[in-house]
Image (cartoon, rainbow, N blue to C red; front, side, top):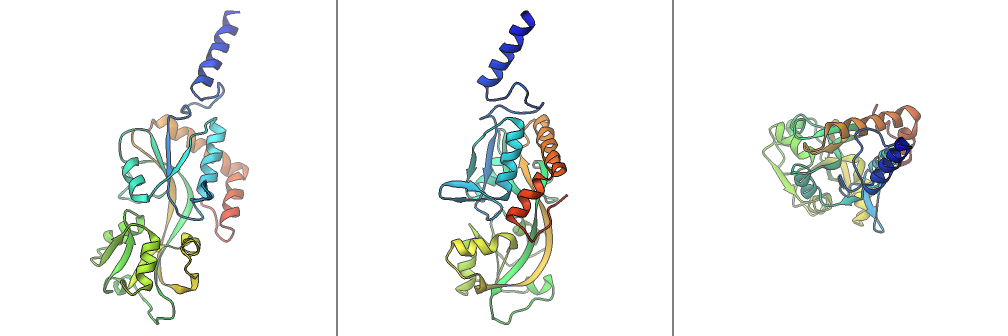
Length: 257
């Protein structure tokens, strides 16, 4: 009788804190983790007030398997990037995992593959044959705090011009205010569509790297949470649900292992 009462009490306590009684070890109560993302279609974006995208569906499925329903908040990347480096239990996705960021965060993934490319106005006749050609350009636009900016700075670029968002960079490039725009190609078609700019206005003049994107957690997040999220993601990769989500959003790309 006492054992039964104790079990009921545990169940009630779990429900009161937003965690199922049968939740896996490492699951946080709902409201215990801040989930941040940015406008980066089709990986993560907002449409009609609803946050959507490949990584959003992956995160939501992990939460479902953990018995959690924390809200996903969309905000500008630079702000989200600062917040996930601060105190508290916070996650930001999808973030490229780079050597410079390795020790700044705890990682769950990979959940997407990013492809770095350099764009210029279409039909301008410009072609790059190496990264050295890009270094000699008058200016190369990058989005502030994106991994592409970090990559080029690490490679010794001295001509980088940081801007707040990709739409600003696209418009500046087309207006002739910069020579090149270094960015990630997955998001470009939908970003340009959202901005009302024909996709054919820009073209890739050089592609130079690929990087895997992860869910990046703040250092304050317990290791038990990281293990629980990685375990659920591995389950999704084994049972085919991860691949199904990936192919729905990026049918022409291979999901990361």
